[in-house]
Image 1 (cartoon, rainbow, N blue to C red):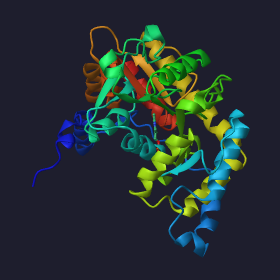
Image 2: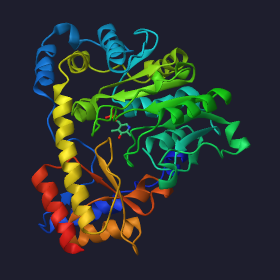
Image 3: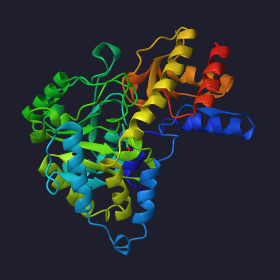
Image 4: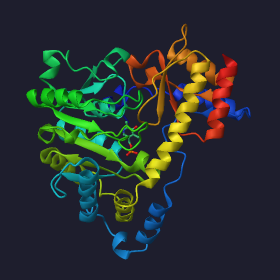
Length: 385
Ligand SMILES: *Cc1c(COP(=O)(O)O)cnc(C)c1O
């Protein structure tokens, strides 16, 4: 049998080599600490789990869900957008339930991209932006990102022939992996660029609730004219420690929401309604769990920053996300440094070039490891250097 060409065109899984080395060390009985994964270690808050326990008993939830999400879930989404950002979205026309936001990010390509078209993606970012294009036999133009542009993907130099075939621009702030945040001015520039060139703007806002030092992340839909060109993908995964539950939503431009909904109607049958019921409680219930979680991450962030400073690596304290993005010491590439830390300190950190070429020279450290283990990991790195 012959698999499709596009599968061969997907980049190799960039962390496969590290995973293999980690597994080999573990097989030798070595205690390896992973600071590599962006998956919250803390449990889903109890009131949400309890809501699920009730929802699962309701026989009406045992049948096929509504494709677009239950009306109650979409109304809860609209109410949350209003309460959290002051943004008005129509529950039936401008919201859509997702089986995790990754699902929406992957499938939006099918709704907008033809073979040979382009998507514009940040040169350091979530691999699904470009992977989804590859699966549609389309191309990716990577928008440069670096410390001097504050990790704000630069769309000022897209060549005309690429631009004329570009259908989607992906952005995501607060940013994984750099921890960068976007200014209203940057969002406004992206909105007017996409509007001028008739491109759908997809804003990936998976870290909207994870922030520190008083910073509160915005929705791009707060900006004037955003709804004419943009949809925004939200996820309950990081906000409520619900990565395993697979629930998120898209909001914004009605044409884009409808097109994504049409793709999904033909591919999946929606998310389990009981999970949507629990998500309604997450979005509408007491939000203290978020402040508590952010206090834990902020403490861990400072722990990591102190340890890095002690070995001569200084970095900007991120105002948001669960990651510290740090420059590697002079004389190392990202991969060499990650390999040294793994083989000699038995700690996994992610090499920045795994997120794209502009990530070379950096590593990403995830804050989703319990404090004692994180402390142990940073001690080991300190000793090594
Ligand atoms: C975690 C993450 C997502 C996806 O989250 P889901 O679990 O699929 O909702 C999307 N974008 C970025 C940048 C992420 O880090």
